[in-house]
Length: 503
Image (cartoon, rainbow, N blue to C red; front, side, top):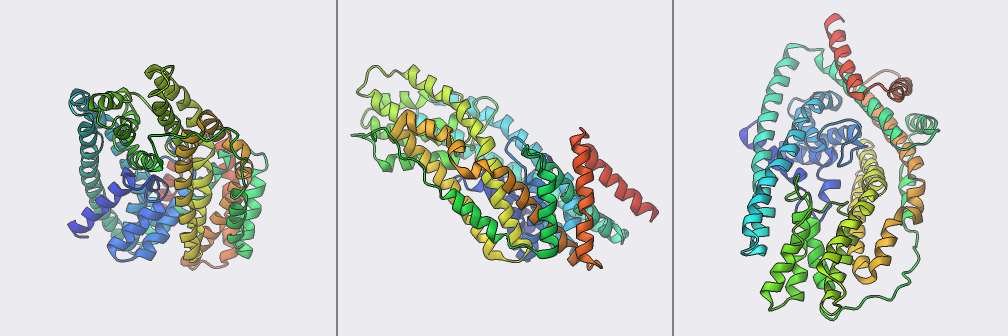
């Protein structure tokens, strides 16, 4: 591994963890192990192995959300490190994952540090926003925070990857059986992840659904295209038309909404911090709107920008309906004196909580897991068209939901907001997502385990894959009885170390 290779890995981590300049798509694609593994494989000369390793690693984070999934760690960092080890040390993906997973915790340190030092940029912004708010917002909410993240990501990734690669190379060379033991650990981690993930949705027949899907996948290799087709059909459900008359603005056009939307989707986490969370980004997203509303009125424009420099936090993709509604109120305020600045601020704050709860039932816990599992299945079965189709569906869903939120909020106001809050109740996909998730997880886990055992050239692969279902039931029982997942993970590593010593 050359220094240039390590440098590229640092840049890949920055791209995945930043999520800026991706219109909101990056968090659901580039930040996931399946994509960071692919990019790492491309950088190191073996994209297919990197993609396969990242796809398998992604199963450990299938229930990952921004507030943390069941198995704690950094998905992007895990994908990079696992793919690096698999490609450069020529080891099995399961072994690479077992080594990379605990080390991926370094990414969580970067995240915490990022939230802390972004507060410093916010403090600097407070001091300069009174002079030239637009310039100050660009400098202290985007440019400098992203530059700091780039430097921190590269330094942390280079050091972590260098140390991990050197130690792994040394120990694998000294202990020939180590790779086999680590690969076993990786397989057990996948089963443990599935055992934990099905508890995400409260459904009493979870174990039965998962087990049946797992067995079907192992023995019959069920074509998961059918599941994707079901998702497409259900998602295509037509919703009722809005009843309110569409709001017409004499000043703002679709172009201004698009500019505001692009600013928000690209930079809503550019300066995410403990003090204002997304508040700085919200203020910046209003710049294109106020430039038009207060054309030739610099003082009013800058006062309005500063007015939105306050605490704000919501689900960034579903929550765009708030932005649209606030823009409508700002437009109406010019000719309706009953709408005050404090009314707009109170409305914005009041909607944050209601829309933020949508995170738990839409993008992060329904769409992302279902479609990421589609990507994983496409990779492990070597049906790359399935991987591409699932990735396009995920990207399209994020773009559609976020952009429609802007338009519905702006053109239909309160009704648009209410329809967005009730989205889960109206779309059938969300009503049956718990069952779809468990079934698809069983299919994908069964196929993945089968492929790993195939690579290991295990005798009686089918029966061996099916037999591992017993461990799934055991892990699931332990978790439901209150045993901490971290303790189970630690036990898995310790047991395999004992096995290595005495066998």
